[in-house]
Length: 125
Ligand SMILES: [Zn+2]
Image (cartoon, rainbow, N blue to C red; front, top):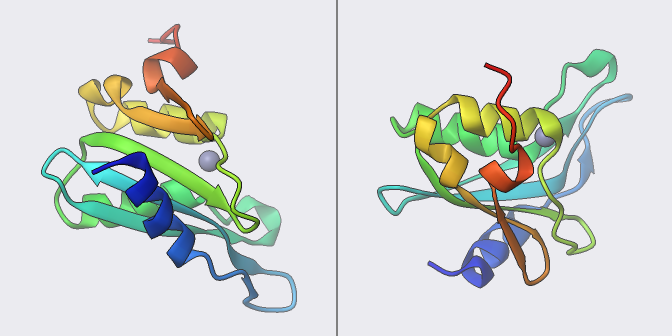
């Protein structure tokens, strides 16, 4: 599966909307290609008091719910179609759920792919 295909899957999951007076969702969507060739997607949930989470986090939760934890490729797309890199928390999260996820390829902007190892070169442990 190409990054272009993953991009289209993520883009189709975008659905920016208000959930309640103070909470929003769907302005970022992420798609993961797993080691077994499955695709998992998720959208961000933005709530007050830091209780929400990123689209990458939501896609990882779907992948783990399905019994997988090794990511081969990942992409996240903002509501305007821009490819955005994972935040620091998501980079660490990706790395912590499988040792080989350091080799996971992430499209960080159009035509630029980096591994999690590139994005987090020095382990804290
Ligand atoms: Zn994040």
